[in-house]
Image (cartoon, rainbow, N blue to C red; front, side, top):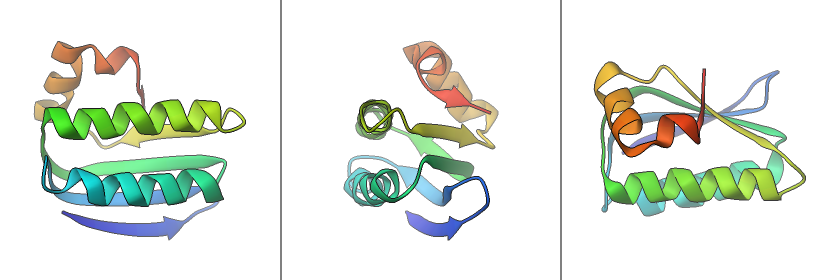
Length: 100
């Protein structure tokens, strides 16, 4: 997985490309933790994400909890493909995560 970090007027944006699975989820965990510590709003751009495993879902859930626990910061996902959105819907994550 490739993660590109950009600072925008909205906050910190992490543009993700590739698969979010057991192998790559620690990489996202590190980037997400750093982004939440340094920004009020973290936006995950899922335009390049083709697959999310249960390990990836755990990282997203932990990121959401960390953001809410850190002075009520925001974590949002955007450009989620229909295939990944289906995973979020089936697992109930579409009701937990903020998807724009």
